[in-house]
Length: 340
Image 1 (cartoon, rainbow, N blue to C red):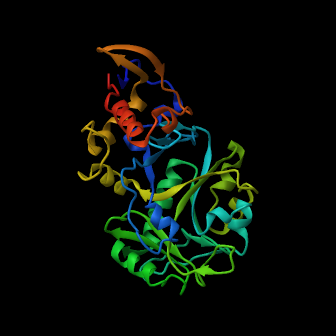
Image 2: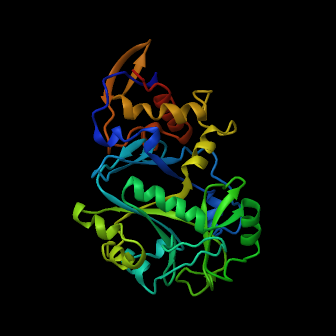
Image 3: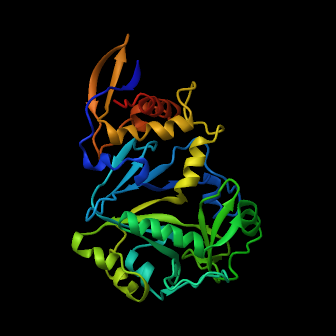
């Protein structure tokens, strides 16, 4: 008995219809558990065996919606949310945040680009008392522009140089932002904080921390304020939730780097040669073009078909029984997505 996707009709779910190649703007990725547990002092490599999430944004006029596509997670396979959402990336001890608006706005100030050939009137990055962050945006145009600004204004840094800096605790000399332009962590953004990162324990950590995604829904009427930049940026801070009831995601990686990760022959995507990473990258998009169903087959005869809907988790770790089995089921599901 294997998990299969069964062909149906043209996709009519607006959330899932966003899943197209041109709408995919960035992804999120995990570092090793050892890296996180050491506060990024060691083991700065990507977690083995993951299938990173990707984020899609509508290009339709006056339709500022987005979809998060998360294939492989303990809670299951899911594509969710077409409501208007505001996206940020933040570096620091995000688990100390009790009030997101306060975390972003307390003693906030723009970070001027450190590169001599960059003359930007609008800063991509800001700092507050304990955090460094960047507003990503609400709509496709804003998100694309923000990521370009981040790449332009951050200091290029190789993975090897990052590893050395964090090993030697060299991240507390100044507040700065970095774009990893070479090595296994290429496509990620990291930051240092002058004096180190405050964890609330009375001891600061003098290393570079990765930027991680934070997002939350906003009403249509709040779009102008949420998207405000430059001298109007304080308006954006006013519509940040005054609590921590937001989605905290993983580390941001540019979409080009995420695609490279998927297409790496060494990526252990599935078990028993179910599918390659490159093929997975392509077939995931079929959910946006055609309605798919989750079902089971025995002796080639399908039964128990279940329509895949946005906002619903499928094939959770609990249902699968163990991580390897869950991964095999998820990769088999995507491998069998139909394209007609």
